Length: 116
Length: 139
Image (cartoon, rainbow over all chains, first blue to last red; front, side):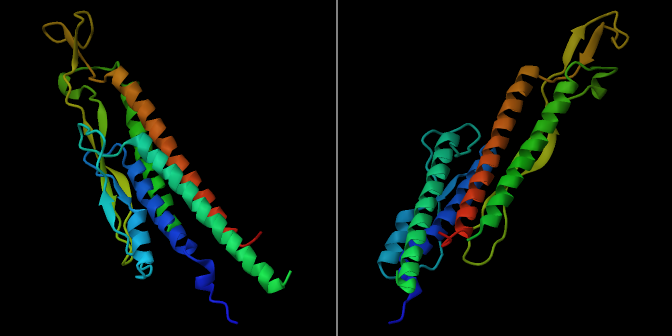
């Protein structure tokens, strides 16, 4: 019986990749928190998941969307620092979750190989 | 996956905030400086931030970097004080002082250092994410 590594690891490598790309985007938002006219962008997890669930696979073509701010600011900057920090923090935790799942999958495979 | 660009973005943010902090420092240092003529008076320096999108490989989204595109002089009116005995006083007895608003500068300084810290946090978090990835499968 051959092990298909992609199938064995499940969806977690894709989500891990998505989390890194999203934190790049959120880091950009945080760096530009005080740039006049900067429009905050974000990636949508739902879109990626729908794509994967529909069997279209994971082609890494993430679409960035512009954020709709809760309040408008005078300099047309749409970064809301507190919310952005919360998103960044949560995204990092979601990354850790995917990482933990991957680790569990790998240790599962390991014990299967070692037969213990 | 591109952790590298996160470091670049946070680094660019830290650099921009450092420049801002530098302008604040020079503004505060020159806050009470008198000038011989209004033309030579010190005017507060203000950095102008702008976003740059770096070109990345195909299929990859570009992160938003920040840079200081210019440093401009504040166009607030100079502080003209009536000091007839001052050596720099003009015919009417007024001396031109710099247009630095100390309270403004202090607020700016706090905002800049907080923003700097935000970028440091972003970098720290990215580092711990990458460390976790490197240790994948080791336990």
